[in-house]
Length: 208
Image (cartoon, rainbow, N blue to C red; front, top):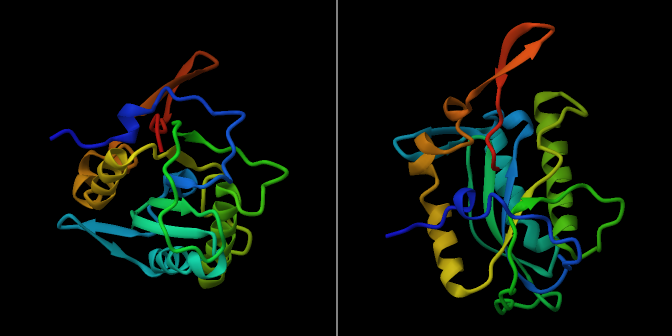
């Protein structure tokens, strides 16, 4: 059976400049740690084992619905250096029905903006990042240190078939970690020529 892979299906997508990311709908979100460092735990026997930082991420993600009543959460997983989750934006605060799936697509970084609609996907992620950064930096006594990449990745879920595939992709992420592009062992070295000399640096994966 062919399993949904946002890395393969939407790598060439472009940002939808006129799309309203505050409208009702379901979104597949990926948030990566700064420099893709494995800060949140490790995979053992195809299972994710959260460390103290990873538990903070899980707690803050789960309590997001208490802070933002227009948000519902579906399947999610915390990985060593990223988080995958399905976020549903509902039409009314406190609504409990599943919001309609949206008829468009695109899995690309959402760049930081000067203004975010208060109930938009970007505002939700920004608030989540801020809360987790504050808590983790308090634990490790590193005020102001980055935890996350500045951007995040999104995929607008268009129909139920896509929703089911993404749920499966998320649920199976830990067991697929050996092949994950975000696994440090799979980040390819990139040769860079500097003043006639070749040096190597880690090349980031093409996707998040």
